[in-house]
Amino acid sequence: MTTDDIPIRSPENLRQTCAGKLREVRVSKHFQAILGCLLGENWTTPLLAEVVITPDGKLLGRCAEEAAFRVFLGTARDLINNVHGVARVAGLDGDEVGYLVGRLAEVKRQP
Image 1 (cartoon, rainbow, N blue to C red):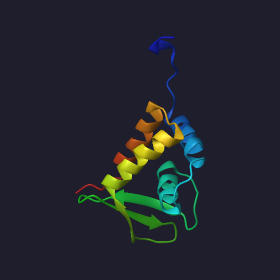
Image 2 (cartoon, helix red, strand yellow):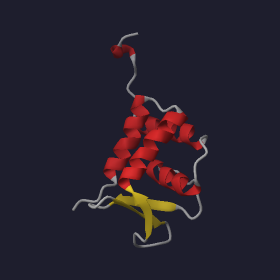
Image 3 (cartoon, helix red, strand yellow):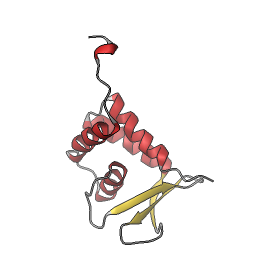
C-alpha cells in the first residue's frame, strides 16, 4: 500500500474516531470535560461549552449556562502534555493526534 492508496479522512471523521477512542479511556471528570469540549461531545454535567488559552498560558472554561469564562482549568502546557499522554493510552493515530492538537491551537485567545 502506498500513501496514494490511503484515504484522506474528513475533520468530522477524525473528530468521531478521536471521540470514540477517548470515550473508552478512564480520566478525571475535569479532563473528560475538557476533552469533550474540544471534541464537541456532551460527556459531563455541567457541560463545558467552551475553552480558551490566554496569552499567558492559562486554560479557562465557560460552562453552558454561563456567559463568561469563569473556570480556571489549568495551564496550556499541562493540557498539551495530558493530551499527548491520553492519546498514547487511547491508541490515537497520527492524524487523530494532529486533529486534537489542532483543536488546541484553535482555542488560543489572540493577544
